[in-house]
Length: 548
Image (cartoon, rainbow, N blue to C red; front, top):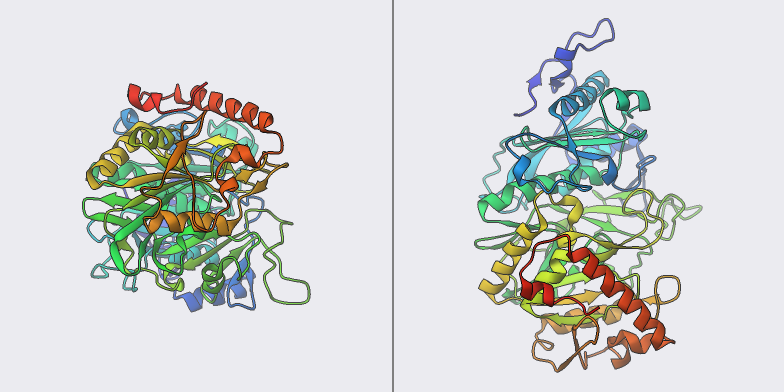
């Protein structure tokens, strides 16, 4: 079911009836549709939504919400999807009546605005597997965000014929907050002013009370995580790149926000396929998006030159101020949030692969930001370990990525993307295992978190060391390297990695008190074992977990 296009309803009395509110007004008098980048930037400035930075990007603020609001996200429960869904804290059900009440509220709000913006584009760089997405919002910068993060018809990233067919709709009514009374009347618990509801059957997303644009992006990723497995495509929360001189040398980097997907895939010696969301289908991998959405706290040109140079006209910077007396973005500013963000088109990255498609991966890397300081910086995984660590998806939520997260929190997120997975995690894990086996891909665990102690005592791994480990993986020098299994987790740690001190490779050696490391390691191992009880898995896979 699509949202209908209609003439603007008669509102002489200042109201919109229930029947009228079911139709979003996309008449020429009311909608600014598919505006150019230049016009959207102009509108952002004219409407007072943001300011122009010295590098050409616009700087905007997302209001009270500076990260996603997963506790306020609900999925419409209908008979056609019910048995396929992994119901629980991630997939919270709402009734069709609740969904319709939220949709009516959003449409009424958008129809009452003087004008709205609409973007129509694609999710999916493979023309045979992409979906058409329409994003309707009252904010020009949301439309600029959508134009950047999705694939614009007729652009360089569009590998098809440019024709667009409507499939999914996002109603981004984030400027309409929900009162506690309205929330209660609709049957939702709590007093949050945010409600995000999604209907897989009606192919519609409704966002109320949050201007954080990441909700737009991730709602479509969620949709693809449900739809694509039925088309023999594994949807993945990962970045991807490929060797500039070898199309068969494709790599995937799985991980939650802040673990290094964007940073590590932006490699001057490799072509970027995409930084966050991909599908692995019968012919290889393909990007779901046309742009990148990167954390930029502490960004410097010295450490991340490709991302630094990608931030220019057409980019959007979120929730940061300027350096005093200038129009230069202050990338060290955390006064609003640590989850400062930037969007930019993927082709702003030198050597980006356009269209964003690649062959079957040769290496699969799981990124974890271990706040306990326990896991090794790099380890080679057996097939059984690969499935075990993928199902558990251990990492840390980093500050600001979700509402209320102020410092790293140890977290198990199935498939390194639990918040975006409507189906059961084992479904995705089995699809990944089948592909790894069929294409003989090597799998690695890479800790981009802490060493020498837990968060607050130890330090994060130096980025140059992490990059050296990635280089050694991708050039094949670690494929047959001599390794020794770690005692508790059984992870095969290489004896040497070019450019990395050997002491760094064994986390126990980096702690001032090795016995304290042992205590922390056993504690984390116990958490793994408690978590893996949530899932059905083959005995060999469960046996590949840590010893307790």
